Length: 96
Image (cartoon, rainbow, N blue to C red):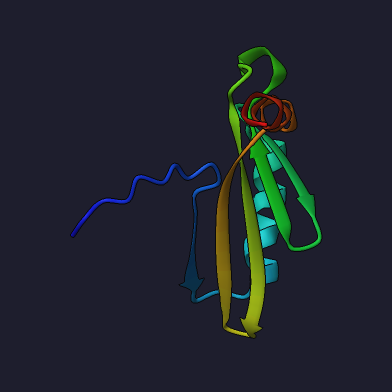
C-alpha cells in the first residue's frame, strides 16, 4: 500500500459503541470529578479532553469526542485530535 505525503493536522476516526450515548457521556461527567490528570469539558454530545495549564505546551493537542445516538442500544463515537486554538493560529500565519 503506497503511503501518502499528506500531513494530517486533525487526525480523526469513528467507531460504533454498543451503549446508549447518555450513559457514555455520564461516564465522562463522573470522571471529570474523580480524576485530575486532564481537564474534561462536556457540551451537549461533545466532550473535550485537554492537559491542565501547568502541563500544557504550545503544541499540546486536545481530544474532541462526539458521541451521537444511533438508537437506544448503540452510539457512534467520532474522535478528533485537534491542535489548540493558539497553535492553529500559529500554523495559519506560518503557512499563509
